Image 1: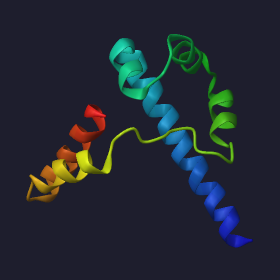
Image 2: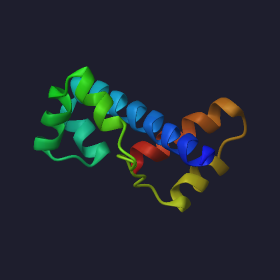
Image 3: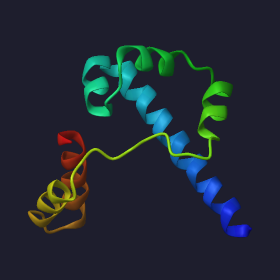
Length: 99
């Protein structure tokens, strides 16, 4: 039972982080963000209009709201070409944006 509660808390934290990031990038460059996040114009508009309370409630879902669109091959290729920790972070970000 403890694991289920911990898992739900982790899902909530991930969902909230995703929603906050999505809103931030949508606010700065909506078209590019929609493309990178795989969102329709209607979904992007809805996310931008959420109140803080609505955002918290949505994040509290027991299901992940985000998904990874990159292939493992793209991620490994990006990471394999770099040698230090800072470069690995950059490679990961590059692979995410390329997905």
